[in-house]
Amino acid sequence: MNTTKSLTLLLVITLIFAALAWPAFAEDAAVEEQQSMLYGTFWSLAPPIIAIVLALITKEVYSSLFIGIISGALLYANFNPLNAFTAIFTEGFIPSLADEWNVGILIFLVVLGTIVCLMNKAGGSAAYGKWAAQKIRSRKGAILAAFGLGVLIFVDDYFNCLTVGNIMRPITDNHRVSRAKLAYIVDATAAPICIIAPISSWAAAVTGVVEGYDGFELFVRAIPYNLYSILTIIMIIFITLMEIEYGPMRKHELNAILYGDLYTTPDRPFEDQDGEASTGKGKVIDLLIPVLILIVLCILGMLYTGGILEGEDIIDAFANCDASLGLSLGSTVALILIIIYMLARKVLTFNECMGCFPEGFKAMVPAILILTFAWTLSGITGLLGAKEYVSGIFKGGAANLLVLLPAIVFAVAIGMSFSTGTSWGTFGIILPIVTAIEGLDSELLIITVSACLAGAVCGDHCSPISDTTIMSSTGAMCNHINHVQTQLPYAMTVAAVSFVGYILAGFVHSAWVVLPVSITLMLGVLYLIKLMTSDKKVSLNAKVNA
View (cartoon, rainbow, N blue to C red):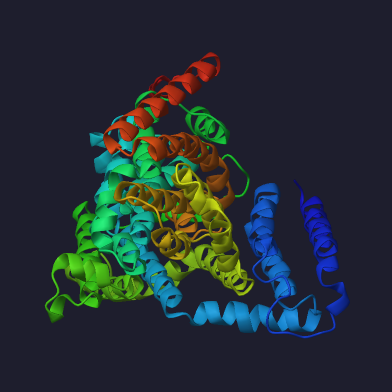
């Protein structure tokens, strides 16, 4: 779709949106209020929906997010143009960039970009790529190695997304794995792994929002019922071993295999950075040591913010940690030590190290821009009463359908997380509602809590305005919309099977039954997909090794 058509489509959709929303308050449009007259209604979810639909149609994320922000500001200001324009900054961009959590994530991004630049310029990444090329001899091996590293880095999803992508990218490139596939592997081993890891920032977040219960015990007991996360892990292994590709991902993979085109689409914002790893006289140790320093200090940073020095044990320290601050502190100390290491090894000069700061920042600019827009859109959506609207759905009758409650909670959590781009915000809203529902026995409560967590991860996994989705694209150096479009069919396949599993769980109340049945159904669906695409199938390994 060319630029003229994209801009025309953006304008038409915005005008249609305005025409539909205007009658709701046309008579009182002149009245200036701090609260939207559509507060707490379905219209509170309209701005993110507009942004997501536009991004998927136009394949242009910046303007789509900005149109969503404008539409949200207009709703918030009751279509007063001047107030709406002011709100975009006073209630949108400025608060999102002033938020301590958000600033911590941005610092971590820039520091990590600088560390990656240091490893590239020193030659550590190139040396590791050559070494791995000798050890990993197939596409399957490269994909499974990326998957394995994602599983190992289970402490925090942000850290996972950026670290796995940057380490594994030279290896997957060498074996002609498309950037879209790498981004999927990175994304699918970030939040889905963290949400079933008892020692992680996600366990801490869940523990912190559950009142009246032992939050950590609730989290651990919910793990066997977290169908979306468990089935996602199983799916990655199965489709890799069985060489199954479908949907838009198939085109990306075949282009990579047959033509060496890792991007498929003309827009490849990170392509100019691919060659930076070829310089330097470094060895494999010049990548491994910095990565180990980064991992250890980021974990220590999180434990420090959780009170490990005040006598808290490791589990409690993770439960109380501030992941954003911890990652910022840990990565900054790591950066200083890595620079000292590079100078001591004499693989870089002091001036070369300092030159990596602007280069690292430049590499992270696309992610920073998208995150800023996404956070602003999420903030304005909150001002429109999205939380109250979702709460009303449950209070309006979902609690009376106890047998179907897990499936309903799963579906609603997906919708909210997809629309707002935040899984933590989703279970932060829904979990207190779920735990307050009367009439739930102990096991059904666990199942429903797990359905909420699974749905929040699923929606976050699919959403183009999710921070983890954005960081997965950044880590894999993949066009963001390409990542979203290729990942969506895979995520929806798992979501559909999980939804059936939660319907069963509402009746059976036993993980020993629900989990095996869900896994069997998942493998059956994937095998059916393999049969349906077998007539078009190209042997992936055969083409690469030919």
